[in-house]
Amino acid sequence: MAKPLLYLDIDGVIVLHEKPQRVACRQVVVAGTPNAVPIGIEDLLLPLHDAFEVLWLTGWRSRAPLLGAKLHLPAWEPLEWGDHKLPALREHSAGRPWAWVDNETDFELRRHGRSANDGLILDINDYTGITTRDVATLIRFAHDHSAS
Image (cartoon, rainbow, N blue to C red; front, side, top):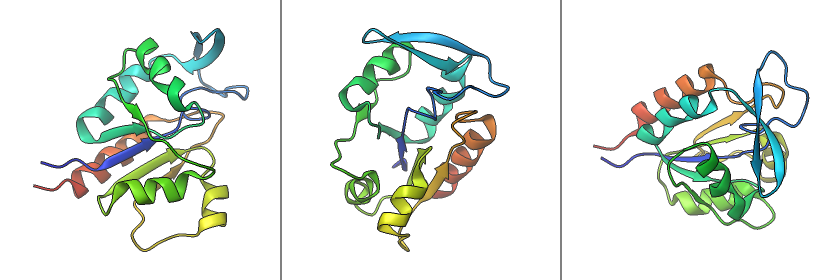
């Protein structure tokens, strides 16, 4: 069964830079930099691995797997991209169903517009990061778009 693709950002989704609201965080040091991550984020993200083929799509680029390892997540690969994420993921997906989770989708959508072939685009509140509700939405999407 082919899984849909999931393109996952880090800043504002997993690492909260703004003052977190109603989110208990812990510090995770990656490459000498402390990062605020919600407590329990690992448990929240793991079900996505079963539902999707997950790739990092983040400004962290090659450092993304370092955070993943600190969080004991599977070894998800980072997708290389140029100046803009949306064109890169559209090209990479090659017609497969996809979901994109980022806290800055508006900029990309204004720049590149919506396409009829676009998948699920979740714009995450960077004060809270990804939530259980977001994960449930993603799991439903994966279930509805998995090829048999």
